[in-house]
Image (cartoon, rainbow, N blue to C red; front, side):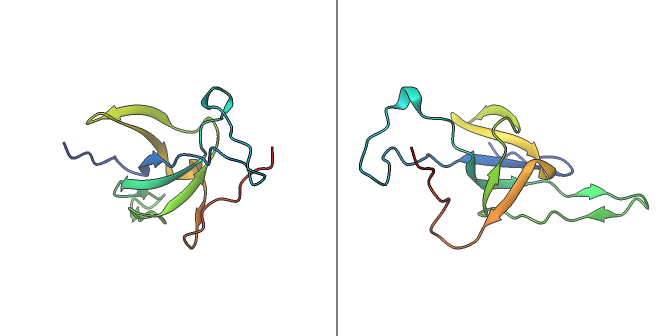
Length: 105
């Protein structure tokens, strides 16, 4: 099934967090937090401004992004867990391929 979000909403696939600290300690699944990093899967057409013109979104499919811990609505499409959120809920785009800086435990 193809899904296209409306207006200024985006569909995000969570990217799993590292299960090992930089010191080599393995973190069990039961104490890990949900990842706050994801990949944009689909974007809407954009929001309308005061003049009624469509303003395009700043992100595109394939971008790696950071988002707030409680951002978005969790949905299941084609058996995959995804998040739908407004573009304003995104904190930023991660440039390069190295990903998020890991928190020390």
